[in-house]
Image (tube, rainbow, N blue to C red; front, top):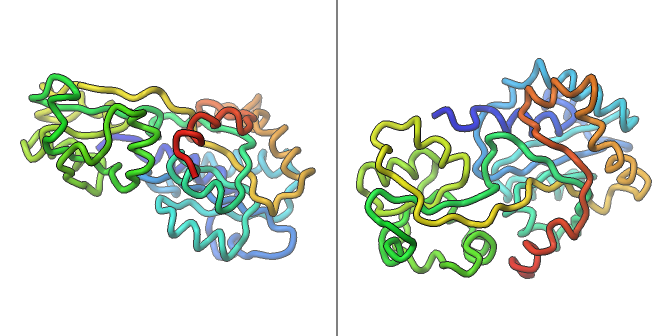
Length: 277
């Protein structure tokens, strides 16, 4: 599957500041830790290494970080183990884990990063036989996004439906979700924008169409943990946009960063309110 082959993994590792070699993973006083959590992400971080070297050097220089470490996870429980052990200063989250972990770890929004092909900005119900949302309700629904019912029901669906309205066919991989519809094992599927973009490249998907779409959601969120001092987080936030300016612009483009900029709580307030505590 072509979908986001390494795209987010490249960006995730770029934000990790250093690669996860044994020498780089040492924790110690003064270490700036960054955790990246992109659920449903795909790809290998190693593909980004030639471009990461450039990006990491610029990030470290901009922020005067002498020691930094970071990890990329596609599973929030594994990420929480890292958070509990290392107490990172910053996090970069896709929306579902951000909303789930925000209150527990006192995450403050300081920025946002839009990543090409990462998915998660918009969700769709697709089908070959149904013509509208009503035609999917009560029927089989394939999705690899059904692992966070609260996020789908409260944020993605926006009151249009709940997962309980369907006969769920859980899947583990993005491509598997679509093939369930192609093979007739599910009447409908809930997919994100990255998965939808792959329909044109899949055999047997010509008749599959969109029957419902969500509102467009904000980009991935850059957060500060309480461990980051006010002066450190202020500098990091001020320099977010600079990391993709001038000499680093091509490096950002290569790792799939569309935009990187400062943000605050109001940019995600509607999602937080919908998700609830």
